[in-house]
Image (cartoon, rainbow, N blue to C red):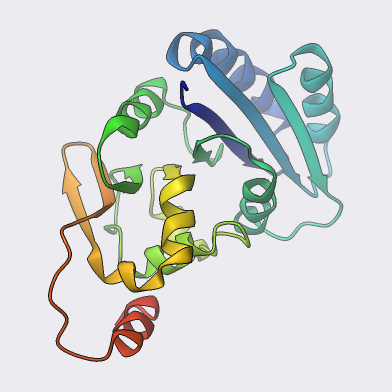
Length: 211
């Protein structure tokens, strides 16, 4: 089956840029992915962002909109959206960063890469850290992402849902992941199993804590 894409857009007071961004997405997404959805998660906006998102959802079957009544932060909005996303791959994009069709296409092209768990366009300041893995493991319950980390990244990230689900079922495999930068992207991917020198549970706990 052709893999499907969920593009998740957590927003807050984005009325000024939302319509233009959605129009751009709906122009190139049909050529990029055969099966896709755009999921807008409004984080307690005080402008007309949610009403505008609802209008697009009524006009386009590929668009869905949900809203948080109170502002909880972009990371919390992303958590809400991840629980509702249905695609085989989820791309999370923060509209406070410029929307780049090139970045989205580059990430989507990685869907065929064997062993890929997650990838994002190369951050502007800090590299992808191993602590992100533990947050990705909990993507169904929410990707916890610190505000300082959010500001230091380009704002676009790809998550392979099946790989995360597999790691949830077999947490010992977290020790078989590596973080690498290749070209314009930073990736978390599976590597060949390595011989472990200590208790598995201890290693998994250390890894989850980013130690």
